Length: 299
Ligand code: ASP
Ligand code: MG
Image 1 (cartoon, rainbow, N blue to C red):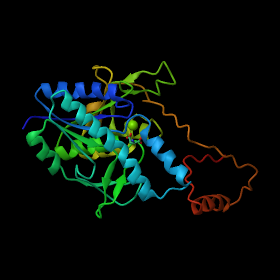
Image 2: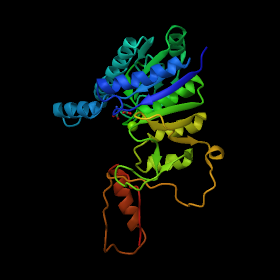
Image 3: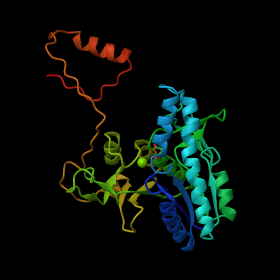
Image 4: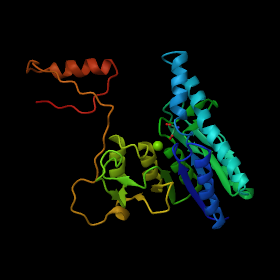
């Protein structure tokens, strides 16, 4: 069979029909080069946010199982629309929900982990079709309950598709043309990194760099899938996220990048008695309340 290329397009890249047409043209171009494409897409634009808001309008704390049922529909729309658009270009394409694409997850609604990806259905599709369009961000548990992988989880879907199909690389198309030293939307002097290794990327992603879902990097490292982050608006090379041996370019910079997380609150506790047991009482209370402290500074 022809080589399979794995691509992922985020919400901005499929934000409206015109953009979906651009994505389809790009996929068609890869097919014209004689390759098959497994393409993962996110929900269109801000669809997922809109679905979360409408569920919260119904009730402030929506049941997670039902919320996943609702959120999964966002990606289901975009896979069908991309497949239909590919058909207009004469490309044989078939869309799949996460469960149809073989994604088995645990039962943690809203933050499910992938347990296994059975590539059978995709491989079967490739016998007749040139493109398989897979809904990002979703799967089903053992009992068939629809689950989602956590916000931004389509990246992880794409990497998992690559791993399951034995592809060496996963192309992630986004609205920046790679991974920058910091958020280029906020800091115009940020520069693009040509390569970085899994651990550096994992650290940046975990600290809040939005460019990749942290679990996708973890998954890529585990299965040895190279991630190529690039722009859906240009054909220039982006950033490669690879093993340390491949990523190392001689550099004397001690810092690779800086991530910004706006979702942080800082609370100062002052005038506490300097005696044993105080810290234990504070963290004990936080723990009981299920509050996660990211950074602790004692002075
Ligand atoms: N649509 C989901 C979200 O907005 C998943 C994704 O885009 O990766 O979080
Ligand atoms: Mg994303």
